[in-house]
Amino acid sequence: MNKFFATTPIYYVNDVPHIGHTYTTIAADVLTRYHHQKGKEAQLLTGTDEHGAKIAEAAKKHGEKPKEYADKISQEFKKTWDKLNINYVRFIRTTDEDHIKIVQEFLLKMYKNGAVEEKPRLYKGLYCVPHEKFMSKDELVNGLCPDHKTAPIDYAEENYYFRLSDYQQKLEQLISEDKIKVRPLTRKNEVLGKIRQGLEDISISRANLEWGIPLPFDTSHTTYVWIDALINYYTYGSANDLWPADLHLVGKDILWFHSVIWPAMLLSIGEEPPKEVFAHGFFTINGEKMSKTIGNVIKPEELINKYGVDGTRYVLLAAFPFGEDGNFSWELFDRLYNADLANGLGNLVARVARLSEKSGLSINQDMGEHETKDFEEKIESLDFSGALVVANHYLKNIDEKISQEKPWEIKDKDKLQKLLTSYISEIVKTVKLFQPFLPQTAENILSQFSGSIKSAPPLFPRV
Ligand code: MSP
Image (tube, rainbow, N blue to C red; front, side, top):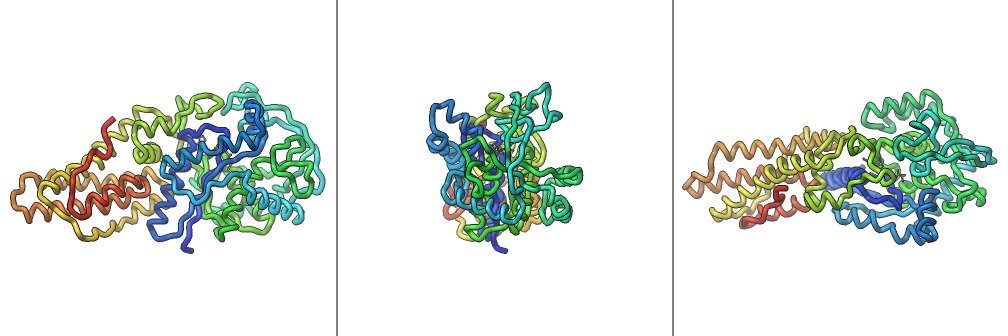
């Protein structure tokens, strides 16, 4: 099919957008732009997760009603994505009318199909509010959630249950056969291993939390925030003839929700599961998870101020292999920016533009495209840093060619212009590879190298 529907997670509305969130979103945007470039109707969905105990508590702290509070702060993520040139089709909020309606329809179907136990029953356990999830004792370190360093609360309530255990075999089969492609492969194996240990039924409602979507079959309960949140993909996808989604891009911490719980929910109403779920690694700071609760977040603005929008998009994806964790450091990012963008692409473009301007060169033909299976395979398997290595390799080749041919020594104008045109042709083709990563820069370079060529200020000033 000629469409590509990708999603980012919907971010907790009261979180501060940090480079962890930014990472997922930029990666999804790059992929969407890539498919768009290939002529597909590519759409990216993102938004905010606005129900649940965590938001209710935050609102209370601010002395506001949850909805008022969410309305006020929900633009933070949107503003950040707009600044970063994220080309989403819809910014969905779980408090949007159409979403609430779809969640209720979805849950009613689950209930009518017998996928939800008829009556609520007691649930007891430890609940981590910042995570919005139940945790087992062995997940804790010294009694605290290892990610948030906070103590989970004791929780005992009558909850409705989803019969997740009914889907064990089906899920195992779908995932092992790549009908639901879980990637990277190590994660697929982890998920399969965990499924094989057995699936337990899960609680899907809250009896004592008002801030949520009422269950359609028992309005004294609200929907557990994760169940509500996962359905956002379907709210947009089903209304726009885009279901099943081609890709849910998520961090490794929320892979289980996306590769097991969510597909089972879809199967329970007779819908198709997503085609692929990809879990990327984490940015850590001194080896620790970045989070508002810990207070060690790096904000995208800090990167944008230093590297610009495209520079930020670039360094985040180039720094580490996409599936793996990576420790953030300014030294590493500065080095990468200077080497690849300031001294690499930026310098090459400036040199060739200067020589071309001096020789009065004008370009009036289409330069075509690289045929590069290698690059395509890398980007389609979400190996962004690998794809960038391939693209940078083309630039190095052009640099070498220029060093060997020494165009600045050539006096014969025709010969010189021919050479410069050949460099420009290579640059233009390579810039098209960079385009999903560096949309604004690519546009600038492509227009600089068409018609009569002029020098321009440095694309990526050194830091
Ligand atoms: N609201 C839920 C998602 C519901 S989706 C149906 C949620 N939100 S979140 O704001 O906490 O995190 C969203 C995404 O950011 C996740 O994919 C998570 O993995 C990612 N990241 C959060 N911190 C991160 C890093 N430090 N590094 C990389 N990504 C991380 O979970």
